[in-house]
Image 1 (cartoon, chains in turn red, orange):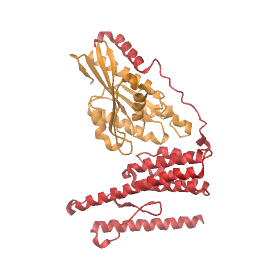
Image 2: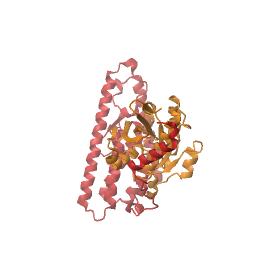
Image 3: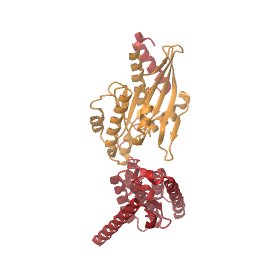
Length: 229
Length: 201
């Protein structure tokens, strides 16, 4: 390209861009408020919170999510189908909160998927109970699959852990390795190893610390419940 | 610097879409591809993780046709936004000619935008390029979320935080809807081509 023809080159670039992408982009206006049905719905804030969750998961956002879900459970306490949706969101939300960046990638996807289904169920006019159940069933199945995947991943990680010679075993284990999935109820929780006799001293200390942590949590929960009363 | 083959009369320019994770870089490329694939006659290459996140990069090459007798080929890349993929971002920036920084307008993402821009500056420096000299366009994405009452950073705030020193062109955009996606692309290509010209002087 000859540098003496700067203006011509710029003009030619402009022409080629117009040929490829049009004379002027339509640029749809960024509108103000829409008339979308969820605008006045109680789930509007929940949507905002779920949209805020990405891989850089912060405690603030997840606490907000759990709080939102709690509020919605109260709002829709008479609708059993919706309550299951909220339980799913709550379980996945708590799992993500406990594992953060190590959460299974499917968890965030499921969070979005459950919310989208919830939105359909709440906002669709004239939706029958059978239809609601069908949508819910799909999400429950997805949830179960995720639990299986998490359990499988945990098993694989445990297997890998077994083959590591003791001298190169990491001093600090990843928290995720202690996460397993309970079958019932529909909540993903942390499970602690039970057989202390087979543990290394480091594992024993970690186990005892986790036990103490759980105890404190339980005490605080009981205290909070008592204060609520 | 762009790849120029004087013998074949071919110029290749590389534009990278940079920015924080989930900011809309891939969505920009997907919009361009889905709306102009008949004209640009190409395929988008994307490598995703299980969670549909960009693992390595997305790649959209297309020919611009002849300019002053040279075949101009444009290559659009995205980088993975997650912090842990810094090595990949650095690698993708090798030989970059122009950058679109896709900022997330959501209020909650203010810090991530700043970190990512700083990361861009650092990674460019590794390749001996200055963020102040490379053709750069800022895109304030997700403006459509205001419709859903999602708290967004004002353009003034974004400008103050990201563009007060750079003073580069910026666009308010919505990659999902397509607002200003093409304007952004046209601007960065024009700027990059002008820069290639200047380097040849």
